[in-house]
Length: 323
Ligand code: ADP
Image (cartoon, rainbow, N blue to C red; front, side):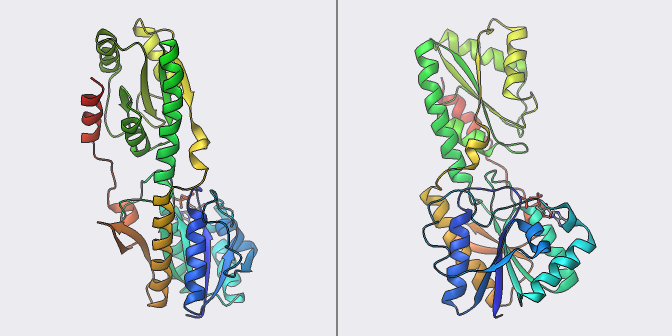
């Protein structure tokens, strides 16, 4: 292995830049050439491939987003698109790729290796923490903290006006951000896709809160909750209860940006070193994960088949503590 590439793909997350930096510098440290592929698989197809140096990645460890940009690319799902991408890699002499993204990105990598023999190692980058094979993904910790800070701010105004806020956080398929930021922000109720909460139960819980002297309350809603979006939940609660004058805040894409936390920077740095050293050792078809504080290599398929669900007992913890 003499020359490798690095790419970010799929949804962006804070810490991707720290990951790129780690990959580039580890490659250089071990005497490899390293190229950056811009705009995910689309850039690979279009030949947006540039050499990177230790200085190209100076001053980015603390920046959110990704200097390589990211994209979703339908063309790479077709054999023709992958042929063009593989030809570009070959043209640049790139034998191995580090792909920072999620399970969609890994599926693409599996095809690239199966069809063209490109060695591929994945790094998990997503705020949702929904990738199997790792306990944490790069960006989750930052997003969780951003959501918590937003909840803190909303609590100030909620408390001042004796208001109830429904706060929607990201999490279409999983409730990690909702559960953790809700617990950390002292939410009265947390609605997540993994656990069914009925409208009646929610209203009952809000009534209990009122009866215990709570003038203001925060209900955190993961965007993928079965009761609907925060707006829908607020509307449904208003329809069947006395809680008609509530407020809704959707944190949205604010959770995707911002300076990564120390945790995410350290995770990205460790994973980047591990990914490049795996390529050098001749590994392919694997993703880097963290398990019991250790870097681990897992087959790409683990990203889909191994479950990474939040511990639902935390909902009970939040309930006990909101008494
Ligand atoms: P993530 O990597 O965050 O899960 P996506 O699911 O959007 O994000 O996947 C990123 C990109 O990976 C897609 O836009 C597509 O180019 C590529 N990809 C996803 N699934 C496949 C597949 N089955 N075959 C080839 N490429 C794929």
